[in-house]
Image 1 (cartoon, rainbow, N blue to C red):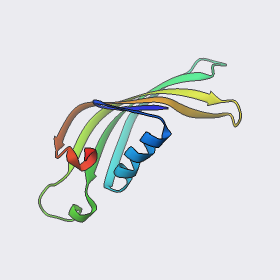
Image 2: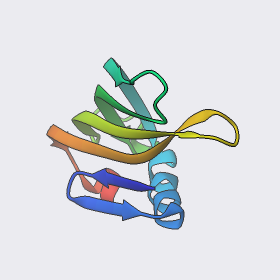
Image 3: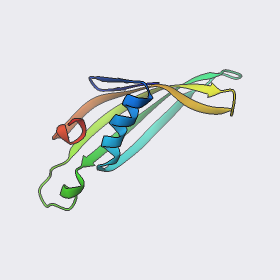
Image 4: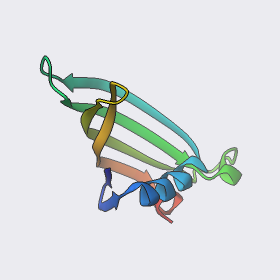
Length: 110
């Protein structure tokens, strides 16, 4: 599994877990829309795209009046693979293309 988050390539479950543990420690809201899935009949692979706005703030700053957040508008490009063992679709590759961002990037990438 690979996650590409802007300029950062995160490969393997150990590295992905470490990255998302940081994200999950934040106060976040992710709004996802325009989800599109390309799937051919009988295929074991699929491709998905989506638009997202992601808001991130440190827990200790969540209720401050001044803005200390990091916000990113992203396009998600996701390769999916059907797992034959449990017949579930699983992510093989997830690219988060940041279109624009505002705020302190260190909130997420410190």
